[in-house]
Amino acid sequence: MRHRLAQRFAVLCASATLLIGAGLVAGPAAQASSSSLGPCWHPYVCVYEGHQIMVGNYKDVTGYWQPFRRTDVTYAYNARHYGAAYFHYSRGYTSCVEPGRRANLTIRSYGYVTGIRIAIGSRCYA
Image (cartoon, rainbow, N blue to C red; front, side, top):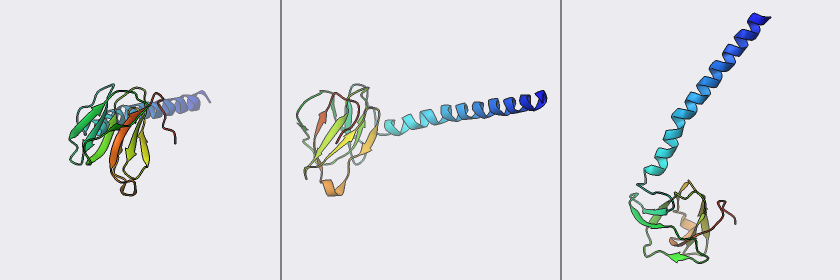
């Protein structure tokens, strides 16, 4: 009985080690996806054009839309630790990117992105 328990414990420990190791390998890969857009550091929300070249960065929490001067904004990365980034579109729709996330802002039925508003909360709400 003791031998069987020892075997089960060894299998459990080996499984846990594999899972932890997989997490360490997957962790940096997840970070690489946001950095593929180019540098963007806290406390900014960075916006990029179609070739993933940064065309603007924003950090101010506002109660109004900060307008974009460009119509080719297609990606965003929210490098903030708190503060959801809302994007306004030419057809009146909005989308949101939570802190630490990236997003493709190209939604044909929404039109093109016309502005950004950074809110205090870290969650996106409708």
